[in-house]
Length: 368
Image (cartoon, rainbow, N blue to C red; front, top):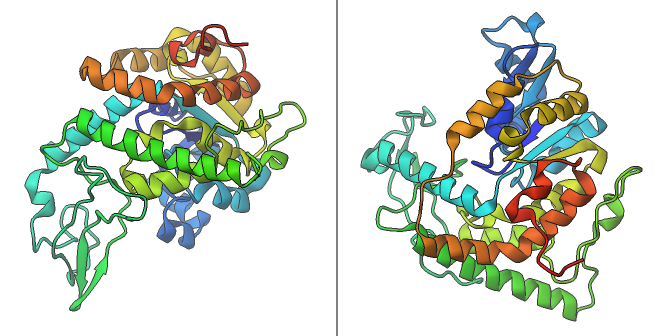
């Protein structure tokens, strides 16, 4: 089973409850979105997971990596496990998720400090590669990452440059770079809103003018019990989302783009049937923990969960740190039209529950 979710979306609370004993072993394996681990194979990942454990106590394995935004994980998972896959997706109100993620990035940056980018530091130090021939020789930040506008023709590079035996090469990083010290959330959010919004508008307009079908994967996502609603002509497809987040905010570094949930869900539903996916909204973990526990237990066929502990963990998080009225207004305005498609997917795929009353998933006044 896989517990998906965008970073800081609330999936961590459910994952903690699922991994609290009862024969379930796992964690963020990072297997299906990492080339080296994926090439090494599933068996090696499981063996590594069991190292130091009593393997006989592991009745089932659960991967809690935040794969939702991954470009490669859906197809790799389908190729490796196909119909055995069960996906649990937890989504948090996207403006709240963005402010939480920004706070997490700033905290991580403050802990690492300038030492993380000190010229000449061996990658083998503090979590590096261990190869003494590899040394940082500098780093270049993207315009989007610095809060400035980036054009669609510019593919930015923000990863460190490496020197291997005198040959310079670009490093492939699994983590987004920390935010620049003088960049505010408002500045960063506005840059992404402008660039991603313009990119999506151009993609949708070109597709509509060319008479292309709104959703080329519609035939792949219809299940025997539940049917995914077709993509409307005004909504971005999974391919639109991948293109725009890659070119406008360097994908892994996207703060705002990660909260565009609908195209990401549709990307997964191009590889898996609706019956293999369970949608949950983060507030459900604290508002109706017993119901969530019951639904998850039935969906994954796992022993009873600690619903009370899950609820306490989510409640303890509270709301994200206040970031100012203007940035929240900008984020809410940007996400509002995209959240309508998320609501349509919840209506079609999620069991009834408290998500139906979540403010960000409410239908606009006067709509059908």
